[in-house]
Structures are given as C-alpha cells and as structure tokens.
Length: 285
Image 1 (cartoon, one colour):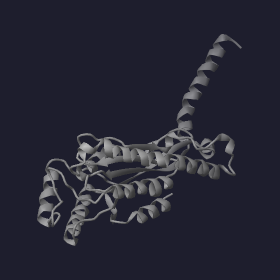
Image 2: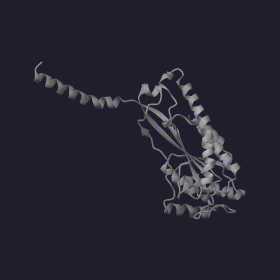
Image 3: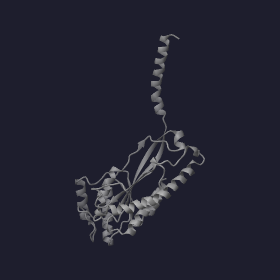
Image 4: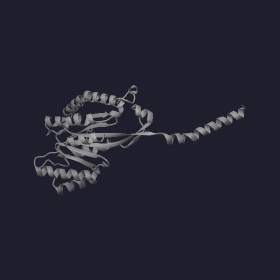
C-alpha cells in the first residue's frame, strides 16, 4: 500500500470514529436509581428532657436508619439557638459512598448479600450515631436556651439535592446495564415540640401564636427572605406538643401555613407519628 493510500485510510478511519462518537453517546444506557436524602432536624432545646431526646434519637436509629437503602443519605442537624450561628452536620451517612456489594456475589443472591451486609452495618453504626447525638447536646449546651426551628429549616436549603446523572457502579446489575442516574427525593424530618422560641419569634406562650400574629410573622419572614423554597420536599414533624389545646392548635395552624409558603408537602404532623414515617420509608423502597 502506498503512503498516499495509507494516509487516506487513516483519515477515513478518523472521520468514521468522529461520526460514531455521537451515536455511541446516544446509546449510553443509564440505570435509574432512587435516592432519598433524609434531612433530620433534632431539637436540642433545654426544655426537652433526656427521655425526650432518647425518643428522638430512637426515631433516627430505629425508624429511619434501618429503612434506608443503598443510594440514600442521612443528615442530622441541630435545632437550637445556634441553628443559624453555628450550623453543623451532627451525623452524615451517605450510603452511596459505602460498598455493600461485591463482584463475586453474582446475580442469584446479590440482593440478599447486599441486604445482609447493610443490616450488619446498621447494627454496628446505630449505637455510634446515638452516642454522637447525645454527646453533641452537651457540646452545644450554650445554644440550648432558645429553639430556632425557623432558622434550622432555612439551613436545609444547603442540604437539598437535585437529580444527578452518572456515578460509581455499585452492584452487578449496574455493572451490566450501564451508568447510574440518581433520582433524588428530599425528606425533611423535624424531631421537635414545634414550639419556636427565639429572640425574633416566640410561640412559647399560652396561646402559642394567634392567627393575627401568624400573619405578621409570615409577612416578616417574606420580607427578610426567611421562607426557603422547599419545592418537592416531604416534611414529617414528629413530637409536636404543647401546654394546652389552644397552643397546640394555633402552632399547628402556623406550621401548616408556613410549609404551604415553602412549597413543601407537610405529610405528617403530631406527637407520636413516627409510624407514618416508617410506613412511608418502607412503601417507597
């Protein structure tokens, strides 16, 4: 073959490769995987007893954590006076970063093996999470005089995730079928009595917050960009209580209206409603 013919063949091959690239890219398959981002706001206010804190922590370690799946993420942040001044992730468990599957698992028993390893991980990690959350109350005791629920909710905007494309292959199914497309769902869990008690807004009164006061509060929050956009988020408020029925009802009405303004869905609100959260997590596996 002459040099001229060889050069032409190389040019033709190069052009063919360029033409094939868009076709190959369009054929790339993505495996859609559901990812639930569980953002838990834990009330550390001084008015809560150790028994109340224990009940909140049990929701995290017994209801939420064991019902997470391979692509889920758990973030726990505090509700106290430092919600804005000293925001921090008390717990961060992103299961995408963990490796529960092995290439040697095969297809037949890969699911069972993955579940077994995850449950072992939960058994080992849950006590560590509980210990961390108990210790953090002592470390943050300078911030427990007030309860800034509004400030804590506003901080969730930094934790909400949007859908992502691509990612590391995690199991045999993903390895065969291609890259991963993570479809994220954001779930906000408030473990609190829901009594806002800050220097700006105080619901810790006999009537809680009257309808007139609620309107004034919401108008003030709007003017100061204090209402975050939580579009697509589901909210579960667990532990809501009060001194009397009027206080409980007024505060409930405020939060119902508040979350409407955030564009979130208030899926559950009450004192002992963690069962609804458990059912939802199981139903959306």
